[in-house]
Image (cartoon, rainbow, N blue to C red; front, side, top):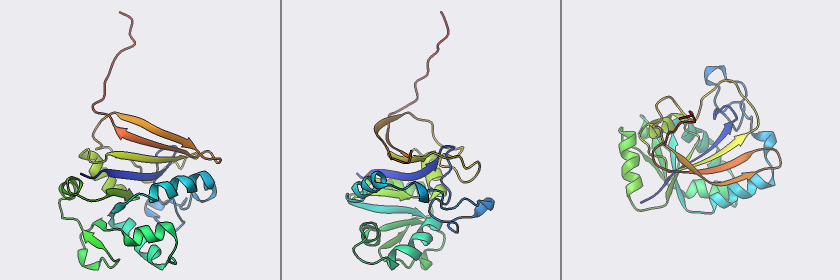
Length: 204
């Protein structure tokens, strides 16, 4: 069995669109691409390096795959993230499998939730999702994400692609770790914790 892990940069209002650069994703007239850049510090680098030190395969939507495939193979050998991403098996949700050119890439079947469920039940390293908002929405609707690494940045973007869509299956989470950067980024890790329990503060 392998865990499905989503590691995502989020604004305070839950937007995950184009954290890395101005041209990354301008859908919907989004013009704040690169909003994470000025927050990076040593704490965040240490957390990222620790996460990258464990074995993983990548689970990606097609847009994120194309962004990564255009960048990481060009980074010089010896860069931790580049070496890990280039060596990992990339499982990609796509309708055009013949155009997947990055080494070690495998197209998922048309039944994306079913394909991911089979992968999670197989032997191998954990499956790490980066970016890939549409893929995340599909997996949340089927309760297929086991761990959430949410890096929450102290800014409000107002609009853009959100992490939680309207079809996410309700469920409780447990906070298993939390750390703050010097720039105010809160790095939280959550695990699934079963069904939501409700109650009432009404006086008897």
